Image 1 (cartoon, rainbow, N blue to C red):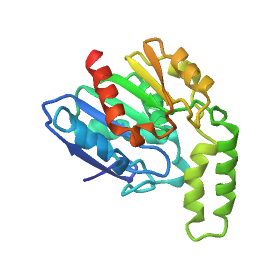
Image 2: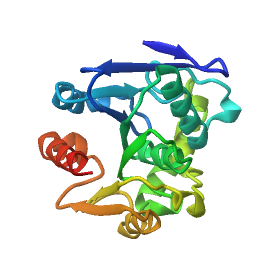
Image 3: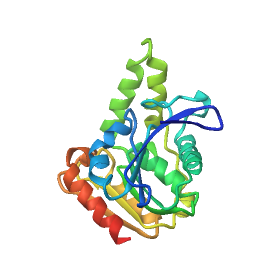
Length: 233
């Protein structure tokens, strides 16, 4: 389904499961869409109400005003969507840029947010390992001259120039938070630990032998861990 936001941007979303249950919201990463969480939808839909959405400029969602294309704007989009859907208590699971959106959103202290899971997020572009940044820079310049190059660079720019998350704002997150990353993540270990240190009620876990995409590559293991944590808070 699609909903029209106040700025005229169409945002695509899907709801699965029983609306009487608690709601899990999954936020995908850069260059992905809501289908990234198919394994999570199938696992959780019989136990929770599951909401997935395509961030603006991704999947079936519109781009909106390109001048407003940012992690902060995507967090605002999420807030507006949740108000439209009138969801009550919910938990957010954000992966990669989805984790960054989750941090921006959670820092605004929404009353109905009950828990936050941040997987492979970063506070600054410098939170990524240097080799990863150099690969993104290469891809950024390779798009010059391509028909869709401008829009691709807008997405890549979210990784090169964002996020720019205010540390003081992150300290405002007051809900139980699980901070996760793979042992071999593209995010520096120090960055993951920094995020956890800024959020008072947080727990940090590094997945042994896991990479940035462990939630996708190890869905059964990841889903059980997520379920156990959500049921504990």
